[in-house]
Length: 486
Image (cartoon, rainbow, N blue to C red; front, side, top):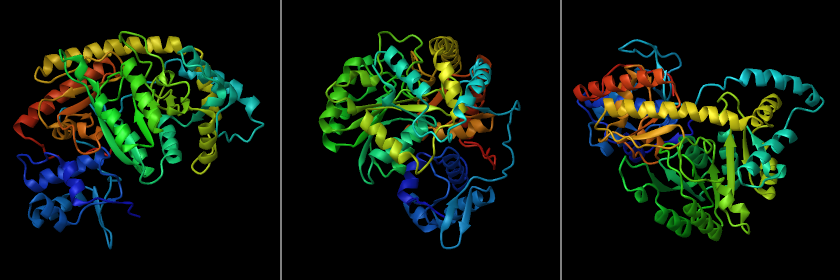
């Protein structure tokens, strides 16, 4: 079943500056393939008809037909009678051909390796499981001891919280999707940062929201700090004029820019949202990855007016701090919203696995020590990445971030998608900048995570260097198939 019809205009916007020294049909096919691999063209989307796309791009229909044929031959497009050309990922595509050998390094996922103590925590948690076996095991809100531990963690960080304000979810992404379904009606406006976490805007769109973007700027070393971060004027005006029902923000170590919203700005933004009745969702999954940020920051909701506490909702998880394979997250909100979320949840899932909740309950008691260890690793990796990039790519602008897990690098020219495609030929999967926008922007940027080891960072920078050099000689190398990895 085809769920999405992509117009020629929408595809043109996503393509960006796609033309290169390669034949037009080859370059077009390669760009559509990259857009499919990194999710900007959703699987099962119907691409524009050849005639419509040729008119929009100013190309012959023969060129479009040749590009589509190339995509069909590589498994990225299928023709369905009555439905046109449908985007696919090849089910058994040949392995990615790596020019330089050494295997494939995936930097598309900004996540740390599993916590060394995780296995021991899992074994200990298994001993806690028998006292829960008398129940059904379906848990739509979270076991009491975990909700208490999460509430205590918020309280310790400066935001008094009780267990009734906590709902345990299947990770932070599940929390975003559930909040979107409950709070958004089809056609409602939702405020979103740009750039932003791609799966957040996907969840908002899936709920029927019309997205209203507000920019977040990373800048470069030496830039005036007043120009960095959130465009507050635009943000406040968007709240006042568009009256969105909700907004999605990452106020601490924003992904991908690494920026943090100043305390006084948080207060003004929350006050403006309260006046409009807008619920602001603060994604704090990496909020405690502070490496060397000056000042003290409380959880975002702590800055809300006590008379309007429902304005701020917090989400978190252990996916970044512990391991992505532990699918436990949470929502902190006022009790009425928690009740609505619980009532709505059963339509899509029946609760968070009990054993994983028990593991997290044990780990939260040691979270201060866990975070201190993680910060030390991130400090070393951040400094190493910044030094390597400065040495290898002096023309790139690499902002210094004081926390988080990613760097938002300005390449100096709109070649991010081409570089991402070229990098795959050298063993590195890295998302292009437009993956983090909602309108095909950010071709000058690339997100490079520093949550990997120094050895992996060295390999990634070396691969980028070879890809960058190849890009200068042959703007988009033609390798036929790409890896079936997103």
